[in-house]
Image (cartoon, rainbow, N blue to C red):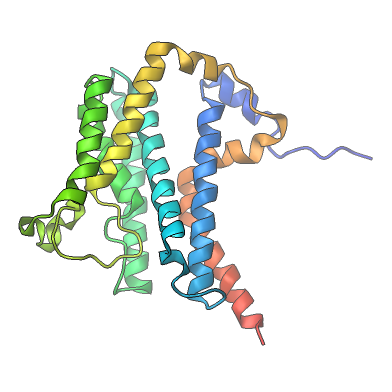
Length: 255
């Protein structure tokens, strides 16, 4: 019997040759799986398979918070690994333009599909802005980054300001008025996890841990997760339409 092989048999080896860190790609894949799980629950509630308020329950809300936080944390880690003390402007701008284009596509699509709660500042918008600000923050000592992250997370929990109530300032997250959106990830508090990721990456560099992780071989059967981790933006864009189509199709089959 012929042994089945993956369509990417040398993916792990190629990634090592390019200096990619398999553990980081696997972490991204884990965040993608968590995101897909939450969105599946959201879609099942939307189409009446489970209670409509299920995604709003405390457990699922915290699951969503931790998932979004993990994406931003990993984005902070990736910024440091990609640029460190020297900004590679061409690579940064190429990635940043892709993020902006994808964020705009999400905004336009949700404006059409759900105009009352469209995504005007979601996870991709937050990562794009945090990446820009992170370039300026990356030279701060790790302790300063951690302190700043705590302040960013704490501020919107402790106080809100009517000064930020105009619509064009809602991206800050500091407004006093409530916001309706299916994915709202403002600068405060969500720049905090990004800064923590940046600080963690710097500390790991100082400890020499990245060199050790770079030599760690991914498990032989992990190629789907490695592929997902290095193509996370594509998967982010396509996974929800696929999930909605599947759940909608299942809804049509119900008696």
